[in-house]
Image (cartoon, rainbow, N blue to C red; front, side, top):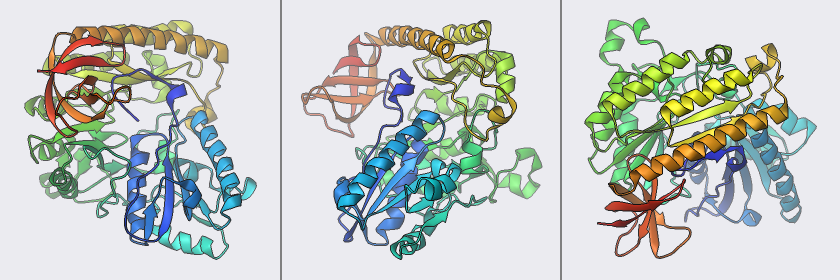
Length: 478
């Protein structure tokens, strides 16, 4: 997950989040979520479905009737982390033999047979489009059977389910606007674990944002694997705009229009989104962002590689030049916009000279922060079937280290440029390091820590930055 202005490498991934209690019901469910923000959002949908079946959420795994881990398959390390947790769960189950263990999400979709039969680690396996079937699956495992539903859907968006907001701060929340992905990047398992891309009815998205604002939330993050390709036309599976009928075009809503609708809920509701795709980011989206003060001036724009041959092998759909053009457009339309990225070091056949093209783009953009990883071959992806993972592990590590070190320099440089400036900060909570300090983020997604005084979470505070580290801005309310 993204928490503030920091450099993230693969050692930071796979952190679990447990859920706080719901007063209704007598049975208890414990959920851990790993990976992307979409998984954390999905866990709230699962909690909502199970709440109707009489389940509390609990932070104490030892008292749980159901134990779920919501999983990620994007990298091998994430799957290894989940395997270790499942083994830990089995030790816990010795003290509570009636507890049932389930795997949710992408790893469930990818490894269903192995989890159920070969390793016998779980009682049920539930894919990301099958959460509505959870009540039936739970009943099935209660009879002593194994249960599985990993069927991918062309329509499911869970638009009618109001998520139970769990483990949060009461200030910020996620709203899923679409599911699946059509991009077919050769290194990625998402199209196989989450299915085809389909967009959610914009009316339900705006309604959810309004309900969150009415409950006191002051920031929403619109989630999708590729939010820029959001397109609602009254149908399910996404079509290209050019293929719509005139009637469909008349009632269609693209991502820029959706952003505007959500921004208009209230000027006091901040709007963020994740993740963008360079090939689909339009000037219309950027101009809408610039138009509304409450649409945050922050874009996560994955680069993956700065070399055109590698980008083509990755099937990313853009060139280094196209990517720089999008950066130039962001800088032109929103000069104060912060940009973060994803970078993969050591993709199949990448030479050191091609690695330097990535370094070149990093120096061109000077990202505020980045998520950086060594290439991890994923089973059944096109890259695994077609290309040889032939960059030596020590060379991958060397290149990743160069990328991380450079990004740390850029993050510190960006933060130093903020010293002396005043930002509007949405307070999210008490600083982990001091009970006398609060933390929040500015529009650019940078974490700012400042003395508590009489402020509280949910307040907007103007904070002048006096100092910084490479990860955090330090200031005082003015």
